[in-house]
Amino acid sequence: MSLARVRALAVIGVLALIALSTVVWAIIKDGQTSPHSETVACEGEIKVQTAIPPAASVKLRVFNATDVTGLAGTAKTQLMQAGFRNITTGNASEAVDATAQVRYGPAGVGAAYLVRAHVKNSTAEPDDTRKDATVDLILGNDYTTVNITPANEIKTELDRLGKVEYDGDAGC
Image (tube, rainbow, N blue to C red):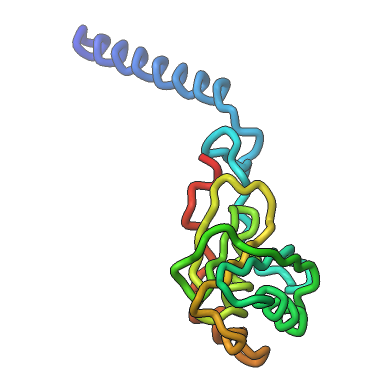
């Protein structure tokens, strides 16, 4: 065997040893517990819930941001007729520039989509600091009692809203 061939084999052997050592080191240092482990993008991250829950399980707060007395109560009655059961009402401290505004956190994304489907022309306002699935519905000056979507049109409204996604940063 020639000297050049021995050198080439020695270099290939050293490279193979380095590659093997790198693979072993990577396997040892790998922090995954399973191939499908959940990753946390940042400390304090809240899991985003995109599944649309039944209306009866949604925790909903309805706030009146208008000068119309009793508007939140009227909306509560209509939403209860639509299947929502856990509803509280009150007055908002500030006006909104929309028919209605739906505020929610990462844990309430699916519930917020359901509320938006029930309240025509409502806008979404993600709140990254909210830790629970509570959804706030703030009624604006353009809100009227005809803004509640009839039951037979909810699926169409959900389709119109599109894919359930969270536009915030889930607590990051």
